Length: 486
Ligand code: UDX
Ligand code: ADP
Image (cartoon, rainbow, N blue to C red; front, side):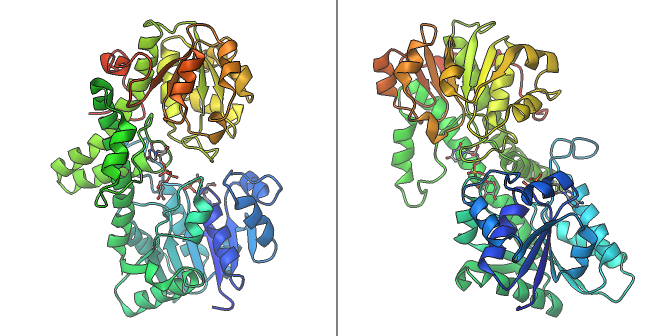
């Protein structure tokens, strides 16, 4: 292993942190991350990394130029490498068969074709990106049928389980590392070589090996189960609002049952991120293709509840603001899909903003890590709002106090710690009255806010007015457009 070389194709949220941690934990391994996007590579080589992730800066700066490199010379790095990680994006298809559901594998396929075209020695090709079950077989087929020389390619599945915001700790202390491969002598040898890389820092009992398809399906299953828990607690939050129960108390009570566990039971404005919706839809599509319609419908409900929750939250705001938000200024706290990341992919904030813009609200958006450019770009998407609407109705502010000035309401959409410690008396004083706070993340001190004078509404519990979300279940708002629901 002394001279092992890793090439990672794709310098994004998965490839960047994963391979930086491998470089950190394996000083004797040379890791080069390549990408077709030269601006992104330039940013990885600069003082301002292209993604925000706690602790990532330190790791990159300590390894860069030693055993961690960022390059656009993809062919050279493929050729030099023993291991090639494919960490490119696999978005939901927006065209053709499987539109809105299946994963688009065109970037993965392009990588496989590139590897086949330029490799001159044996390679272990590892799929890191979340892919549909049997994608490894497709990669293997492309590699085998394009070989000019007598080269041996082994394709392994090694799905990534890191969560953004905690990626570095997740990578250094993984719950498990999963490696799937072919059940043959060459397959087992390739698996062992990758096990040896991880064994540099991961306890051996946490590295599990299995057949390729189990590994691929385990990734989809893990994300589907996690997303399902959030939809379950969010569905329960609607029941809590209707009954006077408190969803946090319910979550605490059920989470103490060791069979259920206490993680991923935080009711919210809906899950976002690049993985959950994509992977659940991917699973739904797989089930439909396998002629398992009941199973497909079962998982589809996880998405339906998530869309419902986003819509319900926006409808609650409109309902509380006397059924009209036209021309009213509403401050959105948080645009990232969760705290401690600048990533906005599938963020619930986008959908909440869309519903409010559809009703003519003026939005003042404040996020500690998301740029104005990103916010405008996300909202100007054809399925969200027109460029003119965004230019007319959306302002962005880095200072939360300025963001709230003369607002009718604040909607907390991302659970950033910075929002917990603001001077809410000062904020109250600069808002129009009655001043509303809609806590879509359950992070604020509701009793204190009420004593300041705010009208407080929170997901899954009754604070100031109660039951407003339940009275207005979202039917007056257009359907979400992230995909057309059947
Ligand atoms: C997820 C998986 O956790 C990770 O294992 C996988 O590799 C990629 O997908 P990520 O999307 O980065 O990671 O973040 P995660 O922490 O899972 O949160 C996803 C969404 O669910 C966020 O919008 C978050 O705010 C929301 N969430 C999470 C809740 O609403 N309630 C919870 O209790 C937990
Ligand atoms: P993820 O969250 O899965 O890491 P990102 O979109 O953040 O997704 O990153 C994927 C990266 O893969 C992007 O920087 C993109 O430019 C890169 N990429 C896509 N296709 C290729 C390719 N064929 N060769 C090299 N890089 C690619």
